[in-house]
Image 1 (cartoon, helix red, strand yellow):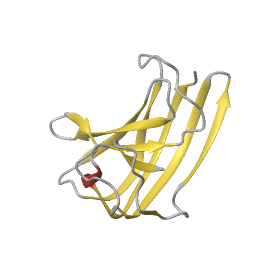
Image 2 (cartoon, one colour):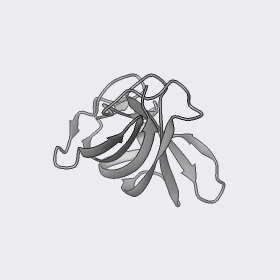
Image 3 (cartoon, rainbow, N blue to C red):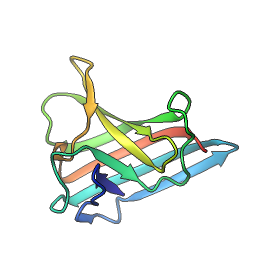
Image 4 (cartoon, rainbow, N blue to C red):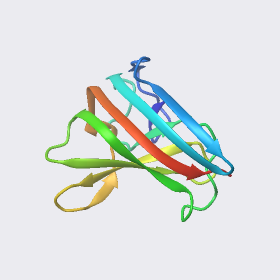
Length: 130
């Protein structure tokens, strides 16, 4: 589920687009997920965005925990070409979302304000479990 970094969930998520699947082999989990947002009214748009409820808690070392990349995203509020990634958080079951500027290569938190109504994001990634 999409939440702001304060823990507030999006007001309404399109259930047909809040889907995911995973495969676990030993301590490695590969996840595919999609989120489509229909409302951001309950979220604090000045905070960073997070995707919660991964199938397993991530390993306690960010050096070997893994990462996620977006293979599709639409209806963002940012200007220009951007890339979205996600980092599993140590000893927890959520991704911290990051925004990369295509021209400058600078990364920062993907704020809730970057999403817009009907924004859609598909991510794929792998991480090690605790």
